[in-house]
Length: 410
Ligand code: SF4
Image 1 (tube, protein in one colour):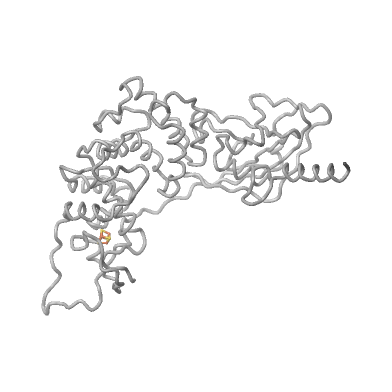
Image 2 (spheres, rainbow, N blue to C red):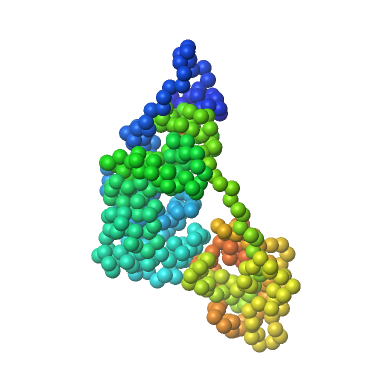
């Protein structure tokens, strides 16, 4: 592997993580590992810290609202994916007060696409709790933070350390990887988590705990990457047991994961000719709780496409019953615990057709702004109702044909 050294020149790294050509002392055995030095990590962080929209500039006081918001958004998601959502969210809800006062539906709409929608509802509930029980100020200890909706041990530690400089040790995926390698933790995840947490806590300095946590996060993102870590430029290379073994990439060890069982179902996309699509709200609790969706069958292991239309929404059209058309192909989506395959049926109904029980007509023009989870965006794109990049939708193509016809005859 080649990596840039501190001078910018590239060096060849052997499987054991050492630069070729380095002179060995004759007869010298392996040098003992030094203790990882938090000060070395902080010095590295001061030079190489990432500039992130939610991170306070060096010397500036962090805003707990921004820290909390980013930590909730970053759970299970990458920094790159969160960036645009964070900017939009902050523009729409610039303070915890603005978020607490907003209707939940607005919050869900702003969140749509980030996944794990229970977090968005907890976010809203947490903002209201901060306003009503804490006078609009986030509590500053791990214990008090953990009493807030949606704030678990990790998030409480991250906010306490980053926003309030408390000695706390959040362990996210990046920190987990760095610590597992630093100490060559042999147990596989998730069993190794308590040991990794202990090691991280023991390493956390009394002062600048927030910078330390963010430094280890940045180290994991930039240097101690899952593949091909750049050990030669790592501030902890002389203290790292995994690098010494030449086996950095093999940590953290992982237990074999059982794949969730496939679930299948059918989705029903009903378009009303005057520019609406039939939708409903999912139950408030459970998977995609409170989000908007087109009606579907239950998602089951033993779904039978032959009887799927029995679960289609009843439509009281003024003329004949709705005619369903099955669209070729499948919509596939992977949730954390299971993969899903959906077949899609579409129907077109006349203007003025009433919505089925418990459902409503959403304007096609506003569909992109609805609180639709990603799987439903895939269904609506597959049904040619939601815009695929660079392509007009079926209703738009129909409108364009109509306008050509009108302009030729007028
Ligand atoms: S020396 Fe390599 S494996 Fe060890 S912490 Fe640094 S980058 Fe990670």
